[in-house]
Amino acid sequence: MSEKKINVAIVGLGFGAEFIPIYQKHPDANMYAICQRNEDKLNEIGEAFGINKRYTSYAELLKDPEVHAVHINTPIQSHAEQAIAALRAGKHVACTVPMATTVDECRQIVEAVHETGLTYMMMETVVYSREFLFIKELYEKGELGKIQFLRGSHQQEMAGWPGYWEGLPPMYYATHCVSPVLALPKAEAEYVSCFGSGRISEELIPKYGSPFAIESCHIKLKDSDLSAEVTRSLFNTARQYRESFDVYGSKKTFEWTLVEHEESVIHTGETPERVKIPDYAHLLPKEIQSFTTQGVYGDDGETHLSFIQGSGHGGSHPHLVNEFLSALVQGRQPYPNAAQSANITCVGILAHDSAMNGGEKRYLPDFTFNKA
Image (cartoon, rainbow, N blue to C red; front, side, top):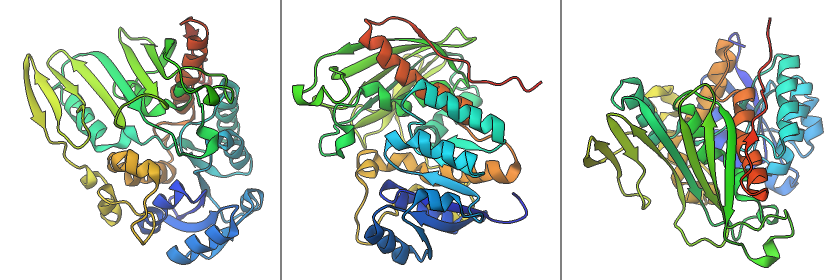
């Protein structure tokens, strides 16, 4: 892939449009095509960003031999089917979270990657946010000491979002709080136990059969003395948006701010201090560094609701693009790759199953393949 630019097709142009200018300016990419079922929206975006190759049919896009990679930004129920179809059509895949909605779908994606030799990356924003990159830097310098415990939370009010979100089990969309507690110690989840709490509005329950307002899950990390806890809510819970993680170390502890836009806290021993999180644009090619501090969706100031609530996703979007493209150019695995994405996603899927069964322990499948 290093001999020429990678032709990228973006599928889904709501949140997906956020990434178009980043690919356009990345030195290793050619923003080749866009795909959207609504032809008016397709043409509007195509004209705005000067993209001539446009598809209303995903199947037709996959037939295009000039497409090297697809970046999927469609509704979550479509992720698995579309990722598998792309891999089977010979395309590398970047896909917004979550990877899938069932354990079997996750397994099928991992198998397709193994069988085709192609690359899959789940575009998980939190592990490329400036907050995570800051804590990762402290940890790798030894400033945190030994990690003793990790905690993540993602609380969000989904009223007003598209109908397929209504009544969604909280842990079905848990990757934003699961990923940092696994990525920092470079670990996988071994098993989970989760409890549901409270009750959402009665009219929301029948769609997925999930009654819980909040789900709280403990995760045992594989081959480690560590465990982690994650909390997730989507409806009927009074809380400002919070997408956070805390890390408790033997020397220093990081705790995410309780109120958005206020400074987080680092405890050194028993001494707390507020900390201003630096930006990490310097890790990126200069052509896309500006995208860590600005949204790119729309020319009239319009911004996707996910971007507004997520506080810009911590400047992660250009880092995600760069990781995906760099992995392709360098012939290496991105983080998270298919097996890691499956582990992260299945924590949430199996956590909800655990909650529906009174907190029963659920073991994660082994998604690795013996390459011998």
